[in-house]
Amino acid sequence: MKHARPIRSDQNDGRVFIDMPDAAGNPCTACGACCAYFRVSFYCGELADGSGGIVPAELTSRISALLVCMQGTEKGRGRCIALRGELGQPGIACSIYAQRPTPCREFAPWLADGTPSPDCQRVRAFIGLPPLPPLPPLPSLPPAGGGSDEGV
Image (cartoon, rainbow, N blue to C red; front, side, top):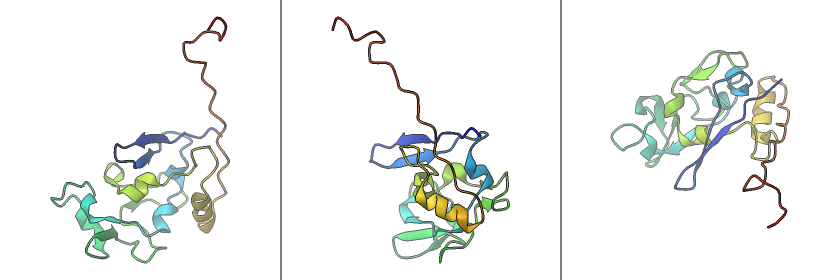
């Protein structure tokens, strides 16, 4: 089976966001385990309540003066309020994907070298899904300049 490669977006402030393509081979569209296992907590500045953030405030619970979490995930092993569909079944999705908080953007099924994320593997096993295989290596690029190394 061919797997969709994550799209990595490096932010100016050092954060790395991961977007999985909405295509065949994206294991996230038939899983949802991370959304029903981890507490999704994040800085309240990400809320769309006038503070400049994008996460809908009405879908969160306050943890402390500076932290909130997605409703349903307060204690961990609880289903996020934004998750739609049945765990482990095709079509499961986040109803606020474009507005999801940083922890969701940073969580990826594969590490940068193509090996499966141990955290992803663990939560997939928790809901009874098989482990993800490693991604095949990316093809190497030709040397800069597009020609041979001779005559340099």
